[in-house]
Image (cartoon, rainbow, N blue to C red):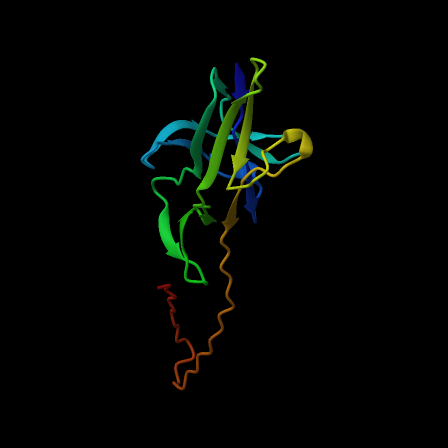
Length: 174
């Protein structure tokens, strides 16, 4: 018997993750026909080095197998689609722009011909198996906090004689 662990990392640019809402991640099993079946949903854990990890429950195997999975960040149901400056559409909620990347995962369980199984995890078509001791890279989901800033100036000229005249202005965004 052997176990494999499927992991990812979370980065939020522009704000501390601790100040934000819950982030969730889904692990989908990819069937032979290419359909995705939801297997697990997990949140973040803070690592000793201060990074935020996505750790799915380890998967146990009792035989050799080749399996494919996909990791996706769960986009909140009330997020909206917005255009970025580069024309790409992204999901946004509370100024956080979510990473919609689907990271591929391949699990390979082999037999060493001595009765022992060995599991390996490959991310995003990487030819090298992930090995925590080698500090290999796991997929990274990067969200950004959208900050829109503008300096708006205007000038009002009044040519009337009423020195008590008052004016109201309204600014609207479109």
